[in-house]
Image (cartoon, helix red, strand yellow):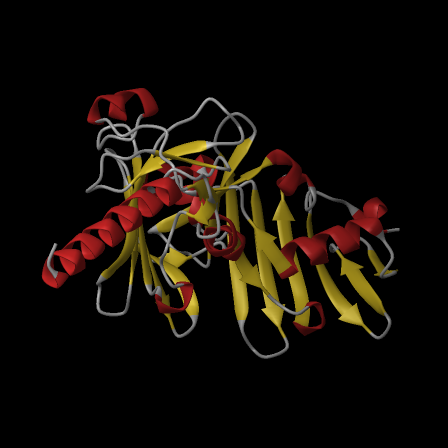
Length: 305
């Protein structure tokens, strides 16, 4: 055997050994991060299914919903994308490698939810189709250009729903409590004003006038609710449907601030203990609150004693 042949045989043996080592390693189960996108480079997130599409973008270090409407994003929900979804673990071994399993695990285009992570130039950093699972602890997933289906070690379906209301910020007004100079309220049973006065607040309704201690439960509830005005739902582009009801509202609230700004709220009954809330006369976007929210303001003098 010549020296040249020995070299060729040696190389062949080495390649065979490498092949078997690689094959063995590939068949050894390991826990890995499914998503490989660098979170620092993500500037846009798209979530879609066969019915809906949502798009979020990071602008001036703040995440906002930019499609189908432009609206502030619930910070808690967007944080879960980075702390939960992007960090979710899986096995390096797929649970299926066959396209015939797409329907079983609901990771096809018609049943799954697609999530995309893009950089500032709209280049895709990572992309996946999330399937449905009956288990509260796992989720099937695959990449759009692969047949391999993996099982995530957490059910992330609730974190990536393309429902617009799920992502919208429900706090529509945030003000400092000590910036409130006057609150004017007209409800079905009363019309009254509240204003800070030294260490107390002052209540007047045209019949009664009294000082209200800061520890008064009714006063605390009113100030707390208005300083962090949180709604329960959204009503988009339906002002004409509620125009007549809002012309005769069940509750009107005026808020005046020491900085010279003010806000106005009108609330009219909708149905099933729900009320529609119009903020600062905005007609494109309105909101929903429940009866217990309205009851916080439906008060009389005796409630402030």
